[in-house]
Image (tube, rainbow, N blue to C red; front, top):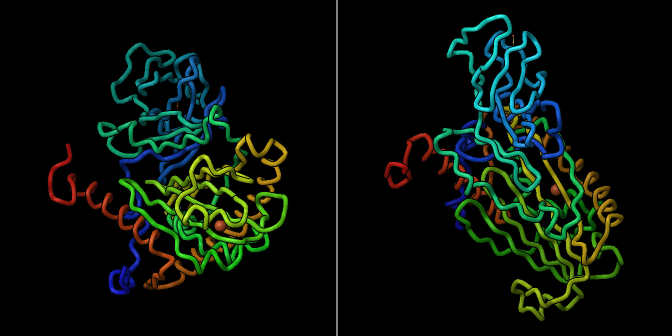
Length: 367
Ligand code: FES
Ligand SMILES: [Fe+2]
């Protein structure tokens, strides 16, 4: 990428950076129990609840009667009752009961969003319901309990745009400066160039480093870490960090290690940065080892490290947001390490433009 093609560009408004026709993570599956759960995505308050068969339903968190929050309602079988004046809604949002009244006006309808529970996350489609396509849900397979990964989980609420969290995750050169104390990350993370590949709905990063301190894997000493991630629309991040004995990177000719190359340690993190408002976001995170190289104790140790590191990120990103907000015409100067950041944001901008024009970049109408 030339300096010209990454030339400083004026900042766009936050809303322009988020695609609506996408599945956003609104909650962990475990957040939604027998009572409704309040969440927010792209400024829209949501009430997540379960029918008695366990199926997830997502409503706008607003009763059509007098606008009480439906998240304060009560699950009744396959229906939700607003606990202000008792109106009852079926899973489509249609009102099926008004206490003391036989006639139900057609306008008495709660807005229902397309929703899917998969990989321990509750996904909500924020765009045109007719376009909700489950095949667009990112494949966050390491979160599935039968895949052998022992992942601890958590959330962090940010006073910043979600896009700044995504930029942070994509550009791992920050590991050298934000996390040296927590992860033992040397300047190699900033000075070595990863292989970056464009994906249909994201970017892939692959990097070998050699002879690095082994802090994450335990056991001390020096190691060769192999790191790869996929950042996928609309802010879903899957990173695998696998640690090998020194000399493995060279032996692999600096290509991706095959499954036959035995690691000293292997960890996955699956994360989602969901915009909850223009300047707020909810960050869903997980981290842990594969059961072949670690156990629950190792997972809990990694989660302590993760919480410390994510607090370091949060302090930097929220500080960045404050500076952005105080700057009249904020512009950025992309560096070489920003290449995947630029690629990902260009992809998002293209999807947003297509969404607004109702077609593809080539001008064809969307099917
Ligand atoms: S506000 Fe929901 S029943 Fe009245
Ligand atoms: Fe970080």
